[in-house]
Image (cartoon, rainbow, N blue to C red; front, side):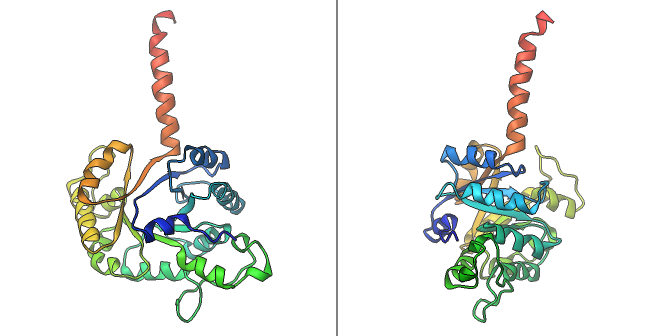
Amino acid sequence: MKTRNALRELLNDGKPTIGTQVISTSPQIVEVIGHTGCFDYIQLSAEYASWTLPDLDNFARAVELFPSLTSVMKIEDDPRTFMTRRALHAGMQGILFADCSSAREVRDCIRTVRPATPEDGGTNGCALTRDVGFLITEVGGEAWMQAMRDIVVMVMIEKKAAIDELEEILSIDGVDIVNFGPCDYSVSVGKAYNTSHWCTEAYKAHRDMLELALKRGKRARVEIGNWEQAREYIDMGVRDFNVGVDLLAVYEYYKLNGGSLRELLSGNR
């Protein structure tokens, strides 16, 4: 099994982290990103993706070609336990939990990740799966238990109910990183979401969440579309970023180059 969790090491050392997210499960895309050498982890946003269980295995395998790269999976609320376990069994070393509305839900999420030992209080038990090499000799061993303790837990703060319980959520042992979700938050307060102009409530909630998290010594991640957008958040003290998404990058490339070439040839058509 892969015992090194490079993302956990960065967090333990207090270093900045840079991730990117993909919606495609293609191992080729994973390898292309890995070859850039620019990222600490790749997040499979499974909440939006079309995937099968073998896809998760192949995604994790591709990430493991790069020792300093970590795989993270974003998981929606239902069936949360099933998807979390399948991600971990595939070899994912980080989970981003979406749709949590309360501190109680966050605690339940953490328990699905941690080993079912008296000291850890988790519900994650033994299985003959990829993360332990499918071998009986590694199932339930010390290396596996430690690997489950090292799983990086991220939590989306994207509902008004979660903002209302933010102080309690930030105090929960096991929450490594929090991340604001402007679209779901806007909807939860009855406002339409616009990618280019957040509603006033969402903008304020985002800033308040970042400030409170940093004040409480909790890591807070910001999702950005390009590197220049990181500047204002770095000035606030943010050191964790997730930049870009594969499908949007493809769209922007073809829109720019296809559109520009079409305009260039417009007089010849």
